[in-house]
Length: 290
Image 1: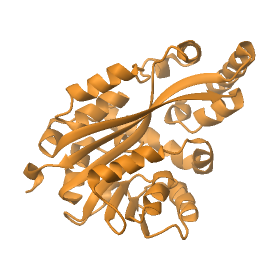
Image 2 (image 1 turned 90 degrees about the vertical axis):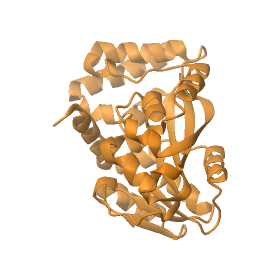
Image 3 (image 1 turned 45 degrees about the horizontal axis):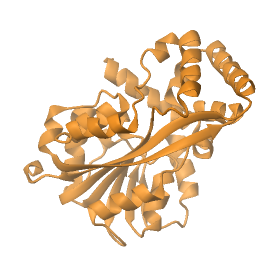
Image 4 (image 1 turned 90 degrees about the horizontal axis):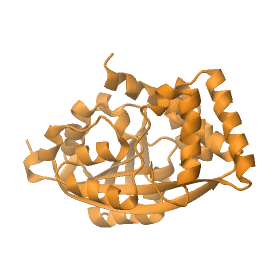
């Protein structure tokens, strides 16, 4: 198994904690969903595809706008939770499958969405499959939260990372890079000719592929920075839904849980973390036709 394949296999943890995932993960900012729809020029009745719908958090926002959604989700438990959450929510077809294994109709979707999921798909074929599924001039919209470096939270975030280095150095060594907002905007702008490169850089993901540059154009970025405050219990509940948690031993998990409670008590206030919700959109290029 290659390093990339092994890393993508960690995504299975979400299926094991589907209910907790839905309860503790933040929803996506409505302003970014609206921005994606505006850029794509889509509205009531248009057909869109969602890759990795999870428990249906983004799906519900798309359905609320009257879109007809085909949503792919390989997780057994995740799709069950999504079915319950999206019952009577709108025109949605839930497909229990990975993108890699799905035969999609060509040029059939006005937009393809993926929220916190595209990095779990094999990048050697994902970008081509997305381009083939999009209608001419259709739009790819990627949404996710990323860590953000800000003065108001830097000390708390460093304390959390220090605990991770102490108890799980192998995880800390590959932790995604936190950047300030200016660096984030500039870095994506530098990579605007290749959506795979830009998204891979944002999340420190090994998903950049040169061939994607020929498939998409007109990359745009929109961001919503947010300061989050958690109690230790809230933070630990959130961490339990993240892929790295499955790689920890029970002893490592207990140690980090205890460290977070100690930090919360020491601070005498909620633990602060800065994040940025990022939306990257890109239009299917004319050269993507084949």
